[in-house]
Image 1 (tube, rainbow, N blue to C red):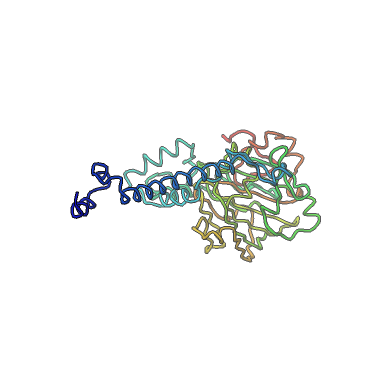
Image 2 (image 1 turned 90 degrees about the vertical axis):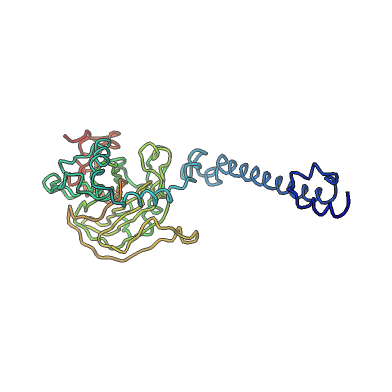
Length: 366
């Protein structure tokens, strides 16, 4: 085969080179070596990366080894935490704000209402066709007479279920037996008197997708600071909270700290999966679940405020369902009554906005 023919054959596809007499020449050998090296480099990178990631999932953190009570996890939890819930929630939020054609509103929203047992007879507008989007439906307004405000010093801020009630001891609260988390890591830096630190209780109220999605003031108080803490958007379902008790410290949240007649008072709105949007009426510039640069993901923003609230005043809203956390001294309610009436059932006590927190019915309201 002459030199000219060799030059022509070089233009053939590489998979046809094996058919040529010079297939074992240095040209083919060099190309094959380059392809083989690239293949093995790719495979090795994937294998090493997979092994490293699996090691990260199954190997406990050093903090878990030396202090298993405050730091705890397992490979299932770590896998769950690594999923892109923030991006998914932004997508769901965009869909929820899209306008639904009028002819589709009743079948779609009606199906959702039946699935989650939404009480449309309590809504000011019971016609599904009046809600242009899912977001508008989630934040439907209720008739005033269906949520009368109790004269008690502390009332429920939202419709939902009391997931947890407990005392803060040594700056920590034990959500699940044997595991606790620091309240300071949830609230951030707050100014409290020694009495506040010694006598502080926490009440956690979970809002299901079918509940009324706004949250209101539970008492007469003054909010002096609004802190936005970026974070994850993990589900706040009770079943998951039992495995990740410090989940509230991981999720994005808005914390309102202030004072009332008994001292320190705090109301926090915790975001969750598909609930990236938290609205605080007194801070219209607040934006949650934004795409952030890596170095800005954990930057807290604080705004000084002086918003005076009365019991029942609207504070803000979620864009689906999530959790409201209260932190206050025990003088705010009869702590012993709540403990005696509900005991372990306090986790399942039903709460309706405006009812006394020391008289929560343990069964769904009729």
